[in-house]
Amino acid sequence: MKDFFEAIGALFTDVLFIPFDWFRALELENWFGANMLNWAFMFIGFAAFIYWMKELKKFNDNNEENRDPKAHSFLN
Image (cartoon, rainbow, N blue to C red):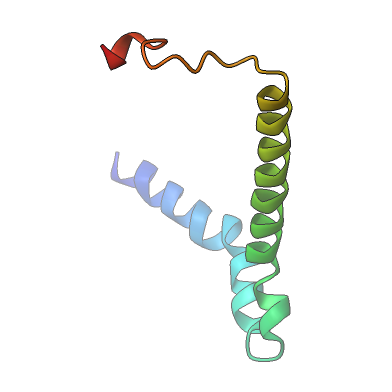
């Protein structure tokens, strides 16, 4: 059983973390390049936020939401 967990550890450290080792080495040369994964996640999050706000505005403009204070059962 110990060998199984050591194999999982070796898989992560020797294979799956290779891109992160590359990013760590790149940081000494180019900070923006080393953080491109973070920039990508921030861009995806920002795009999702903009999409969600547009959808909320669409529903708000159509008056589809029941704004009565007792509309939700947990507000009794």
